[in-house]
Length: 166
Image (cartoon, rainbow, N blue to C red):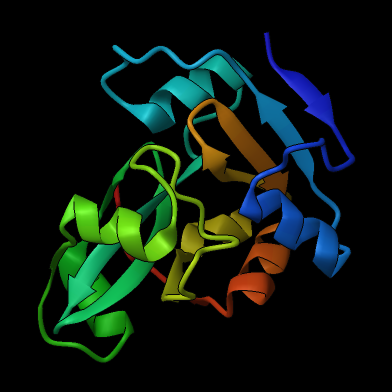
C-alpha cells in the first residue's frame, strides 16, 4: 500500500531535499520494491495505482559524448534519435549504467531527475504537459515523487520535446 506525505521525511533523498529547498509542492509516494520486478517504472505505476503514462522514468543517455537525462513515460520507450535531435546532437545511445550511477549519485532504478550529484542537461517528454501531475523517482527504488510537469521542468531546466515512443 502506498503512503503519502506532503512534508520532507527525515532521511530524505537529494531529490526531496531539492524540492523542499525550492519550496515546490510535491507528494512522496512509497511502496515496497520487489527486487525481482522486471520493470521499475511499471512496478511503481502498479503499486501506486497510477496510469503508466503518468509515471515517468529517468534514463541517462550519451549524446555525442555528453551525458543527458531523458524523462519519458514508463508506458513507452525512449526514442534515442529524437533525444539527440532535441539537444542538437547527432547520435545517442544509452549511457553505461555505472557512469549514470556515478554521475547522478543514484542507483539504477532509483535515478531521479532531481537532486543529481552533477546536474545534467535534461529533456522531458512533451506528453508530460497533458497531465496535471506526474510521478518520477524520488531517488531510490520504491520511492516516487508527484509534482507538476512545469515544476519538474523548471527545477531541472528541462526542455520539452517528443522523445518518447509508445
